[in-house]
Image (cartoon, rainbow, N blue to C red; front, side):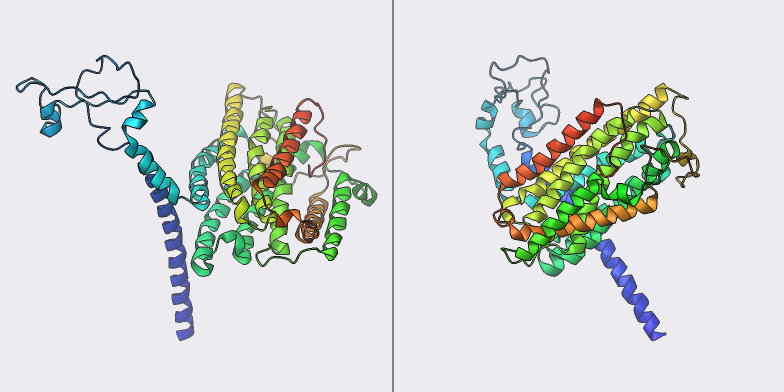
Amino acid sequence: EKTTGRWWLGAGMRAHLRCSLSLAAVAGSLVLLSHTALAFSPPASVLTHSPGNPRCSLSPHPWVPVRASPRPTGHPSSRGRWGGVAGGLGVRTRMQLDPGGLAATPEIANVAATYLSTLTIEDVAGGLFAVSLFPYLGFLYHLDKEETNTPPLGNFGFRFLLVFVFASIPAAIAAKALYGDILANVDWLHGSSEMFLTLTNIFIVLGFRRAVASKEGYKDGSLTELLSSPTATLASLGLLLAGGGALALHPEPANALSFPTWMVHISSLIEWLAAMGLVWRYSEVSGNPRWKGLTWGMLPFHSSGLCAVTYHFFYNAKAVEVLVAVQGALTVVGDLTCWYATYRIYQWACENPGGVPLAPAAQSGGQLPPATRPRASGGLDSEGKYLWSLFGLVAVLSAAVKWGELAIDLPFEPSVGAAAGIVGGLTALNVATWLQRSTSESTDFNEFY
């Protein structure tokens, strides 16, 4: 009984600690936002209330504070609205559009400069990630509308992303409190929290695959077909690069990601590309052409993931720490574009009632549709074959990155230019691919990309 009591006491204390850490993270975000607002707000002397006529003549020099001369004693408005010294003197201050105002109030620049000098990249990124939550909730709101007709499992997957978000908060706090380091350098905490992102993407992919399969069917591809696919070619290249790690020119740094953590990151990138393609295909299944817009809306999220992977590729070097802030900014942009795209899906469905047939996968609660006729071309692999192919591809590419990069100098010579080239180049390739698919009638393309 004593042992049981101690266990419950320990569990309660741990639960209390987790709740406290989460609340502290939320409070920290609010403090960061409030301090940012205060840093850029003008001093009270500049914002003195003006009780005068709003139609009074403007200064010929916008942004220049205009201060009226004291009014005579006994003037009807000599005490102003609030009375007191300012009201008694009849002081009126207004700020108009002219850069000269900045010179007239240098304290604004001084306060802002002082505050900004204390900010770190980690502070900026944390604020951006906190702000990104609000548009994402708007995205989920329209995604869940009945008219939008989102596959249930896919809808659940997008909501499950919130688990990853809130799991990352205590993980980051624990990394700082227990190890005095950033989360990216504490592998077991980093990989554990990122696992929720992988699960999120799998739910999204399987949800939309089942909806697409309800129309396109499953195909029984042979092993020869699988081995001759572009995916197999990419995997073979990965094996070659991984083998190059045996000729490593550099020792692996202590903060290098473990192989499982690399698998989590690589799988998230590949699964997100697969999800983009399946959302594109779902536009035909649902009858709502605006689902293709959501694919474009998801693109900034993939670039955000590229920033994270590139940062780890350079072993989380301080020289490329700006990637963390860029990742946060792209997350905000992705939330906004996905929200807008989903609103357009919902709007089209409302304007075209009856024009969106309910997909069989949605009718059955996201379960696998009954066996359908195999197609000579097109169609989807069975889920088992798909997941095994995904696992093999991810394992090979993860090994290629983890051990292959030891054979080259680039990861050990970090620079913002090189990082921008990697993220920008892969993003440009992604954009070009979807531009090409936008002009094509076919939706039969490789599942993994």
